[in-house]
Image 1: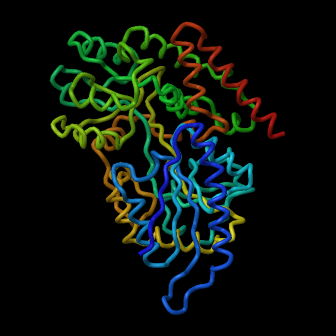
Image 2: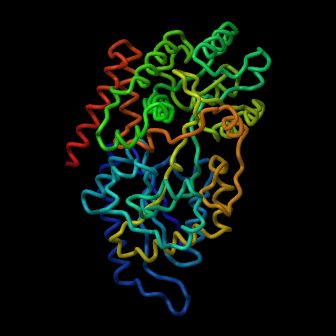
Image 3: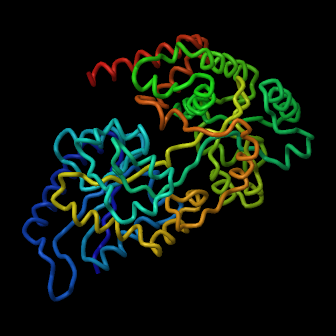
Length: 442
């Protein structure tokens, strides 16, 4: 039996050391591949081929071993090994960029869909998958999220999801709180919750990227007030500081923070702490995604988190649901000598029975699967969001605006919350960072 290889490269220094080791290992496997790539006529399986596959830690095997299981099944069926190299989330971008720049490009690697893929130079590294048979079964959003320059550049198995205020409906009902649609109504609801000793919206601000999500999610509403906003931002014909709605949002957000609606230690709270705060009823809401309630329900079954609902950020006029471009996708290295085997792996992953296995192993991705022949399983939050988003929906800036960086935006927002930057200065800082990227590309 072939052995699935999954490795986690951890710690910055160790990660860099492992990078060299991995690079050597990758080259070694390629050498083996070159000398033994012929198919075995006797077994009907391919011998001596190992596909290197680089992923971010939180993107695979989340709450399960489903990615390992499918890799193992593929090896058993074909003889082709999958060397899945798991990189810690906070090191992933740097490690992948290093691999690309040093020529140690893996056969496959994961990147964000939408404009988030641009940072990895798709024209240089991504194979054109437009003519693969499974593309015809893509959901429309998956097609949009993987299309770059008119070509399908990735295999997406995630789902469309987005951010909103996930709230404990039973708690709201018990206190007579209605779903707020304005900043004033939101403040009234938060004051009522605070009076009961309940955190209105638990913010996990230790993870700076989560602050950035707030502003990123406001993008569709701002775009509804500024025609072709994303196109103008991406063409560098417009600046964030030019958009009055962004400044208004940040000023109102600062007020919400100052009033304690985001919790006592929102700048220091880690992501994982939110499960307990919500699951134990200490907090009534959270800026989360549609499927997040499943994660809370799994950890705290008595919380009845599966019944919680969701509404759009009721700040600065927003009444829209912002969603992703389908999350993350796996791309094939266009110049890989194993490209035909990578495509064989993609064919395997997109078989109906293997997609079924995948989505059953990833309940967090079941609400809107990427393939039309896989039935969706919307959460209560997802259904409620569609009802409460009276302004419609649109793509969040993380996936629609070039050079958007949630982590860096979050740093600037933290500075604003601490009084070290104004809302206008936050926007000017974002513009300055993006200008450097535009200059580098020119």
